[in-house]
Length: 170
Figure 1 (spheres, rainbow, N blue to C red):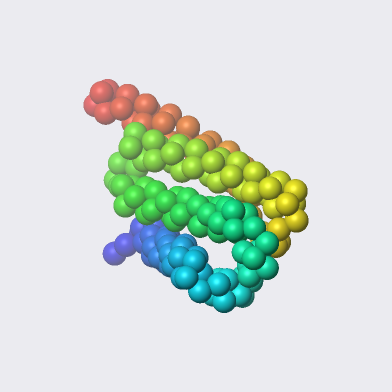
Figure 2 (cartoon, helix red, strand yellow):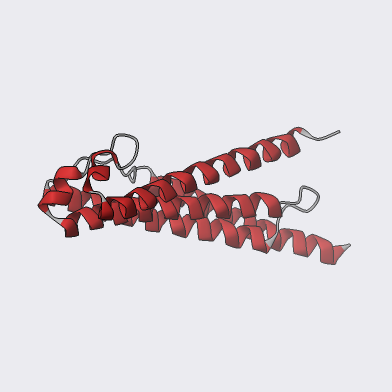
């Protein structure tokens, strides 16, 4: 019989996969429709789920491309973070939970979220300075989340040390 923790980890793994697939599809759709818009400008009217960049494309192709690039880049980074979460969840062993590989993956996730926050911050400043269409890049809470995950990674590292000491004393 599975423990409650094992069940929660399995559910989290499934949810991570759903997030990873969903974000990847959204990123791929934006890139695909951007490429289509290069051949047919009308595609920019509804780039993805109502995102209308037709006027921006006609005004400045460079800003249009940069806007789409930032959006796709942020989505790709979010998909990579979801991929790292999937890897982390698959490495957790409940019989010996504290492993350096898990702690390192958690630190990497934390670092990627800081990058996400920095890019979101830059994108928001760029968006406001150029009077571009409003796009919420959701960077505000990322810094807090990154710090929290980094803290957990440090706790895991300490757990690895304690677990190694306990293994030596037996």
